[in-house]
Image: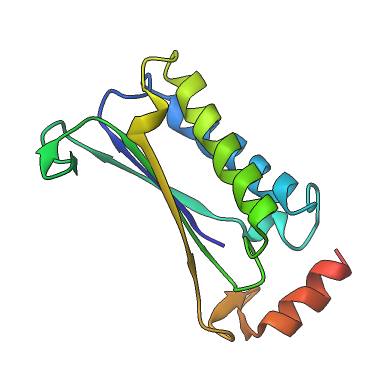
Length: 138
């Protein structure tokens, strides 16, 4: 389940990206009740994009901010309570790591659901049902 964190350069202190990803990953797993799950934990992946000032925009104007995007099977982030918990926690994590300098209204997020069967886990494409069964055993 890839998480993408895009940041305007300087909104987090240098080196804080790894801490942000670790904490956002933990928040994603916790929101789903999967903390420590042996199947799901190593399959929540992430990457960070850091863009220079002047290359990030809101309302068509340059802005310094942060963007969180998830790509998940349709059963993940399907419940509004889970969505609210995860995205609220992820926003707070970035706000805190910025030294509270990055306003929460400059942290945007969205979730994208993938087509069933398009997840490649442990070298094999899996359906939602197959992932669910593997997670239940993890």
